[in-house]
Image (cartoon, rainbow, N blue to C red; front, side):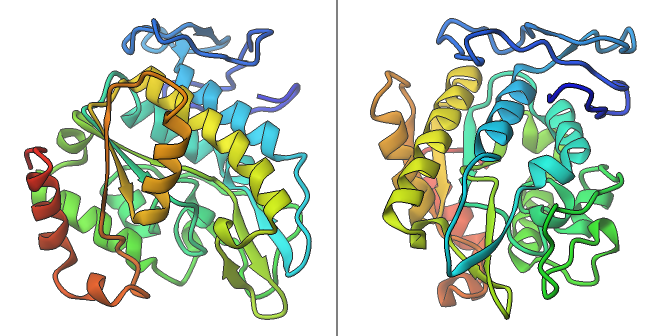
Length: 289
């Protein structure tokens, strides 16, 4: 965390101060998932340390903060900056231990993670199903067509609704799902064009800007995989799978990399029994549901 920042990791963690290693949190393959190594101050006895996963997120946030993007991108949101309290709550509640399956999204949607700080973070599902509800600040430069209203946002995210309704239908509770699975976004930035606020996906950035962004996100993904040691890295869509294959090609990770159908309503195939399709895809890969 940046100096003099006050943030909350979870209900049990108040005003943590993270002590970052001088090596910028270069996690080693030997890290044991259940062991936390990042000290925090002013915490309850039930949670005396903050997860290394939170340090990975903080490091990613700070590295991305210095990047600049040219037109047609006019606005860039990073919910790891203005919604980090909720993001920390998500990590502390559901990001502990090794995971069998790492589900990898692309980047935030305007009515999901951009509002709540949680991947595929439709406000209703984040509040009522995941049990996360907290204040959200404003980005430093807000697009008038894409205001950040946090849990007061009047729009719902279709992709998020589909993901979490599938989780509820398939596993019953968030706790049962996260005992084996984890959801992570490859890139935490959302890019918009003026004057409409049209979303611009990371792969559509200029080559130079895209390469700088991907280099940072690739390393962060490698750190997450080294920490969680998943058996499967599942791209939610072809883009996420492609980035996972490239990022993880440099390390001996041992995971099977595959993809499932993206839930976006812009994808015609996703508008026909997306949940059944995804369940079948995962089962075909050997993942029990």
